[in-house]
Amino acid sequence: MVLLDNGLGTTHEYWDWVCEALPADMGYVRFNRPGYGLSTPSKRYGLERHFALLQELRETYVADLPLVLAGHSLGGYFVAAYASLHPGAKEGVTGVVMIDATDVAHLRSSRRADIDRWSRQSMLMEQVFAVAGLSALRPALNQHKTYRPEINRSYTAFLAQRRTWALAYRDYRDAMTYPELASVDSPLTVITAENNKGDNAAHQKVQAKLATLSKRSRQRCIDGSDHESLLSIQPHAAQVAEIIADEPPTGRADAERRKSAGARPAVKSAADREKELM
Image 1: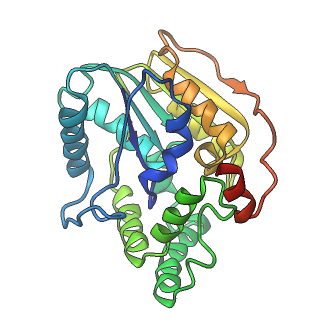
Image 2: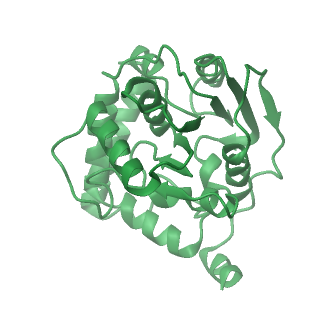
């Protein structure tokens, strides 16, 4: 069983290609944080509240089954922090998978830098676009509509809600206060995108540092991928699913590059994709 934790301001539907590519005998749990999508809003938020949510999901849907914790972006930090900081959480966890995960120490160091100002302004502007009805015309994510048609539609609707971006802005600010991880006492896999917005060399360095958190760790770099395409482009997501389902590391391994099955696919019209998937 794998428990999938979303990145900042995203919905559980964006795991669609990953879930499809998981082995038939591997179950999964994906969810929206309170307030996102159709989930019930809550005034309670923060790291401890998120730990409680993961624990509740685990007790409800996983029980005593062996569990892999996997998260993308900020979700990667959440699952690693849960496994290392929440009492008893690591029991029964066979592996932690951080997918192009956020390093909160690096996030704090960027405060008031250009990337931080751009991130904050983008989330504030997306709220304005949502109120003006423009978000559906120019979604901030999944611009090439690379999922199935029904997922593309629901994802676009999700990104067009002002509440999505208000919560993302709140959670971004809150993440600045989270403790830096010192270690992860579980088998750890770090999946890294080849390309990143901003300082790519710094990003690669941060990802390599995350891979040192556990004595049983490995890093897998997916060629041709970027932060979003790891989940949104089907060949990249299939590689992510394969790594999640793989046997966990038993020692510390060197970084390994995985060749992409191909370059980013040519952008097709929504009508073409509808015909292909009918």
